[in-house]
Length: 418
Ligand code: NIG
Ligand code: FE
Image (cartoon, rainbow, N blue to C red):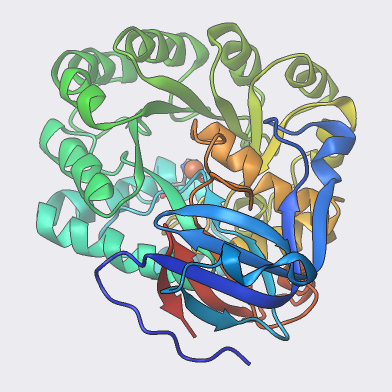
C-alpha cells in the first residue's frame, strides 16, 4: 500500500522511495541502445530510490541502505507491493490543439479513409481551423490538460509539435504554449499546406521567411510531414536545411503511407529521428541500421488508422536505434498512454517488455537530446520516477488498458498520485 504523500509547490529536500519490490532501469550508461542492449535491464529486488532536490542521489537494495545515507528531513514512501521505473518520455506528440475529430472518427469507423478526409479539406486541416480560432490562452490550457492526462499514465517528459497553426501567429502561439506547459517544443511548420496557398512551395517560402526566425528561438527541433498530399522529398529537404541552418535539430514524419525518400533524407541530413515507418521496406531498415537516426515507432497511429505495423523487430535485429512514442493527436492517434504503446509493442511489434521500456525511456530521451539526465534510475539523473501498484513492472505492458501508475515523481516532487 502506498500512503498519501504531502506535496506542494516547494521542492522537496529529499524523498526516499523505500521497500520497493522492484527497481527497474535500462542497463548501461550509453544511448541510444541498439540490438540486444535494448532489452537489457537492471532489476533490483527489495530496493530503494533516494531523491535529493531534483536529482536521484542513490539507488540500491534495502539491505545496503544505511540510515546515515538518508537525510533526516527525508519524506518516505512505503513501496511494499510496488515497483519503480524511470519516468516515461514521450518523444512524439501533437498535444497542442483545439477542438476534436470525434465526427471524423465516426466517419472513419463507417469506412472513410484518413487520406480521403485530408484531401477533402478535413483531417489535419479541420484541426488547423479550430486551432487558429483559439487564443493562445486556450491553447495553453489545452496543453496543460493533455499534460495532466500524460502524467496520469507515467509520462514525466513530453515533446509536442506545432503544425496546427500553419500561420505565423498560431504556430508561434503553439510553440510558446507547449514551452509554458513544460513540453519540449518542435516546430512542425511543414505539416500540411494551408488552403490560402496555391501550393507547397509558396507556403514554404513564407513559413521559412516569416516564421522560422522566431520559431527557432522557442523550438528545439523542426519536423516535416513527408508524404503524398503533404510535402515531397525536395520540399522537405529545403525546409529541413533551412531549419538546420537556424540551429534546430531535425525530425521527419516519413513512410507513414508511402516510401517517398524520407529515410534516405533523414540519414543524409543527420536528423535526430525519422518517425512512423509503417511503409518502410527492407532497404529502409538496413539504411537506418547503418545510421545514427533513431526510428521512432508509433503503433497507436497504425492501429487507429488500420494500417500495417512498422517493422520494429527487423529494425532492432538489424541494429537500428528504436524509440516508441504515442503520436498523441486528435486525428490519427487519440491516446496519451505509453503503457498502451508498450502493450502494442509487445503484442503487435514483436518487442519484449524490456525492449519496449528502453524504447520509451532512454532511447526516447536520446531523441530529445536528454539521455544524459532522463530515462534511467541512476544517481545524478533527474528524479523522475513512476511507481506502479504491482510487484512486477511488466504489468505495465501486460495489462492492456490497466491502470497501475500509482505515484509519479518529477524532479524530486510527487506531482501525481492515484
Ligand atoms: O503523426 N501524419 C501526420 N501527422 C500526424 C497526424 C495529425 C492529425 O491527424 O491531426 C501523425 O499521425
Ligand atoms: Fe505525428
